[in-house]
Image 1 (cartoon, rainbow, N blue to C red):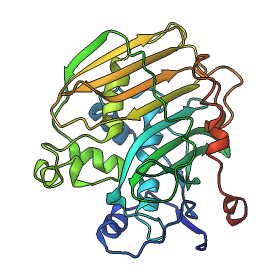
Image 2 (image 1 turned 180 degrees about the horizontal axis):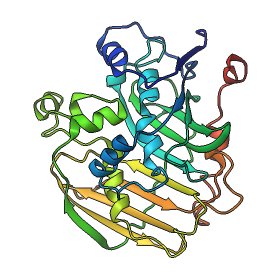
Image 3 (image 1 turned 60 degrees about the vertical axis):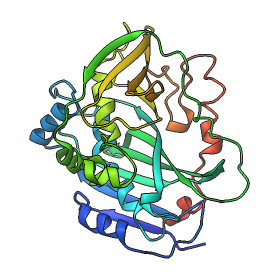
Image 4 (image 1 turned 90 degrees about the horizontal axis):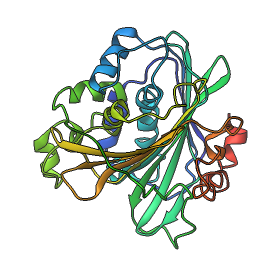
Length: 330
């Protein structure tokens, strides 16, 4: 087992080192529990940048609190630093982001300092490859305010597949048509600056075509912002004390300038949606909900949103255990 790696940043991580690392040839060691974590201390949102983020992502103008997608988007630089690190078992160009699970425990004021931490959780062998979960937490004055699990898939032979993650299954009831619009084909480089992900597949059509796509496609958080801005809300979703949870299954790309349609179904405390982009299959399936009071501990133990889901979300803690090195290396 390789030695634990802890990446510490006291300012916004620069994209230059990890984007360069991403294209450098490195000998990789297959390890489903790579000991890599990254921390970024004391980040404060800049109001002009927050306004630009909300505008590009299609979200309402900024109020006094940060939107749910802000920590997910701006904290993604830590994921990039980890995925491009020589100690990560596969090169970043060989991984595909497949699932996002975000939990906001309370409202975060725009002026509050944020302490980010991202850790690689134990990977698992799946059919056709392996999955790695990156667990990110955001603390405000030492109190947990927000967290996520982002799952990446890589093709290859890693052994016999084990049990699937309980987070694998997406909702099947997508509901009637709720909105249809054309995605704005602009500001792709700017959004890359928010995420720290300047992968050309999100920016240039010519680059995407070289990789087999007919057009470049959007960063996932930008598409999620467009969906959340148009998503019908249940009656109790505004009286939530800051608690909010978003699950998103990323099933296919959304090309630049695509005309998309969103189907949705809504209850008093939750809304499920599916976004279609030039295909009969959804590109994104998601669920936004207010977690049950008292059920929000960590992202692996959030209370279920309906009886059918009760069997899989709370079980996440059992399959997404942090490796033991985390207890001794920090």
